Image (cartoon, rainbow, N blue to C red):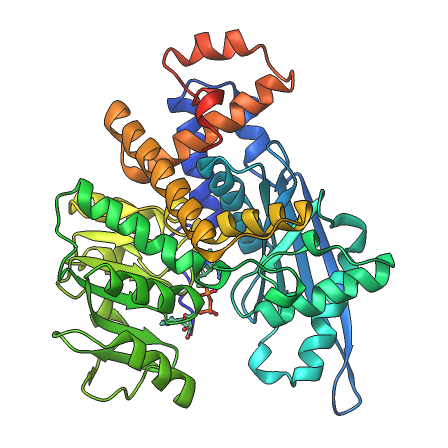
Length: 442
Ligand code: NAD
């Protein structure tokens, strides 16, 4: 089950808006910067009728939020989940804008969701739903408008159906319409692993900066889906020791380290990490509060609440999921001296390789896997260094620093578009609010 924040916790959207407000004030930016970014510029709610296998027609509710196109076309995943709602989609779209900005990608943020439990659908019903989602969105998507991608419970296969439906409606195929698609349809080498790889790369960078050796560093990972499993694989390749992992089926713990490749095989065979030989069972809360070097929440939002954070004993939280820490959880982590690699930096590997995929589709020049990985590592480490430099310069936490880098760039774009006088903007900031143009494309 997903955990929603307790009564004393803010929703992800409220937390993101509160931090945005703080960031705009801290940078001395004019109020319209906050007013523009606090909500999506456009939201569409849709109803998708699907003929079920038993002959009934079931109507599913979905959304697409296009948060901001200041830096380029909007971009972001589509989530199929029984508890997704409009507020969540709005928060996720805002984070996508910040994520693209912090990485210096020429994209804005978007996000989509459909209220459905896909495990209850047959393959045919899932395909109908995926195609119906794109049909309903047709007037507001496209490779230069809004570019969908996978998120929770939507895979490359779903992207393939969506691409096909878009092509049928348009009358021609357009691979740059969607990313995270199968290789044969123009997907990018390295995309599947990109988010987890990025989590490992940014975690390694953080450990280096905080002078914690990665060799044999103990790691606990919540969630073993696309992101969690790949993060586990790359962190163990970098020398860390993954000691605990869980998913919706249960958790496993082995203080000596878990063989991640064997765990992949076990999960394929059984559908869960639970019951992996040589490990003891572990519950979710115990996993999150283990005395390890790194905890990686890689499931959903609101997992690190204040109550959990006050009991955590790790040195670093690497936010592989979007919004896994509540605002109060975040405050408790800082009070306890636990470092955070914030989601908009930590899990940005996915959107970065989605950008590479879009570039390859638009140019017809397809890259080798090593070129993709090399460029990904470079982009992530450059962004990490920029955020870390902001942290040092302004004496703020990593999340605040990441927001400052991102919002500074978005304000630059507003100024360059003529919304404000850039000189007034710079003067009012009294410090350098934004990164100089030359450092944006890395
Ligand atoms: P996924 O559906 O492949 O995996 C989710 C995993 O979390 C599954 O193993 C599931 O069993 C587990 N899980 C769910 N609730 C849990 C709970 N309460 N306790 C323990 N385990 C739980 O999804 P994903 O694509 O890996 O995405 C995970 C997170 O990463 C989401 O927040 C998503 O928005 C974010 N993200 C994904 C990508 C991407 O490229 N897929 C990119 C950036 C961010």
